[in-house]
Image 1 (cartoon, rainbow, N blue to C red):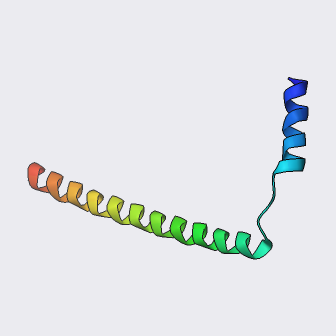
Image 2 (image 1 turned 90 degrees about the vertical axis):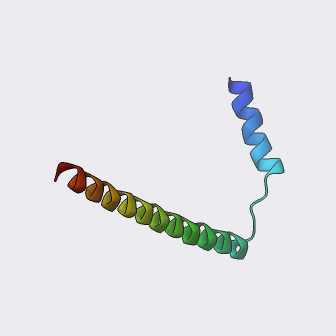
Length: 62
């Protein structure tokens, strides 16, 4: 297990490069925008289904 951890740390130090700060910032903005859009879409679908279920049960019970 210790060998695996040492090799992982060595791999990170020698072979992994981070993107430039500007690219990281741009990617973060893209992820944030898509996350917000997906959350809004999920909220919209949930709201529509909630209203459809209310209408259905109001008509069935009345």
